[in-house]
Figure (spheres, helix red, strand yellow):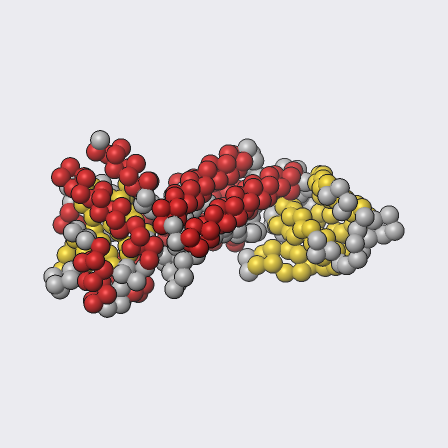
Length: 372
């Protein structure tokens, strides 16, 4: 579960990126596709077709139904593209189109949707179904969270946080399973925004590399590739970049000073409530494993030394602490691409990145795996 930096805690967010993407070439591409449909029991309103490009979504045209509820529309394409078909502001159908025509059938009474023709659009629907399932699970967990917040039940809140991380992990596995069945369809790219690049870098990198090889001129694929290239230095197995910052006494301390131990780089701040809530768990695990070769390297994103030092004392943080007191303009935060806290990196004794975003039970399980 990701906590966005603000004065309030954002419990959980679902990031869904709709992108123009590319995929396998099945058949002769003529430069245009035909979208046809049959809408039964339609309400009053408009049938609007929108197209996604690199900048976002833009209305392409308004379509008309004939007396029998049918419509048809031809759209020119120069690359694989995603579309939204808005049915009278009551139902939205997503389409992934390139070399195959698509047929949409929807009945407003039975709510039965059928998509014919375009295989890519059918595959896209599988991602949409997973999205709906995931959103329902998030909504249920949100209800539990707000109830626990209202009751000020910290134990329940921590349990819900663990469930949220498990939910994200399970959704990632389901989504990758669906993508793996898509046989190279560009529709898979619509699901990439729901994967966490910090944890799923290898999977994303492999998929984008394949698509880039097949469609090197696609702007969106180029964008994905550039983003992943920038993240490569922080992927699991890569050497952890050096951090050299002052400790509370002003002495320069380096991450590399702890070489030879398993080190948890803990990005936190005294003003960050989720960070402070996690600190007792880290203290407990630090005391349990410090004599076995475990160390913590705290990197504070505080603005003032007073708040930083007070939080260290109040929470009993006995490990190494450093900060340049630059908030999110910290050199270390920039190097490690930190835009939300708490955030962690686990470093192995050789100084390589072993894992990311460990906290709660995931941190406890990893330490047990390493030392027990």
